[in-house]
Length: 52
Image 1 (cartoon, rainbow, N blue to C red):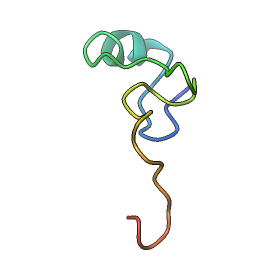
Image 2 (cartoon, rainbow, N blue to C red):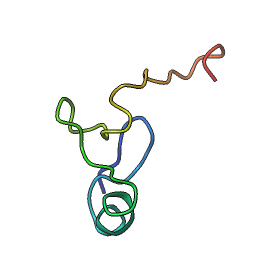
Image 3 (tube, helix red, strand yellow):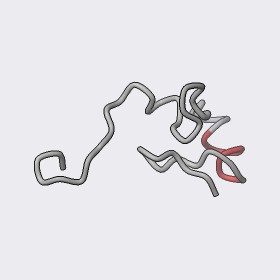
């Protein structure tokens, strides 16, 4: 199952069709299909000590 790289929301499959797209309006971004439309403007999270 394909998920958003930043937030982990499903971008395909059963949970995407039922929950993410219908209820929350999530869809793959036009700029980067691996990121959802809600995360495209958010900065990418990094796993260092200062960004947690």
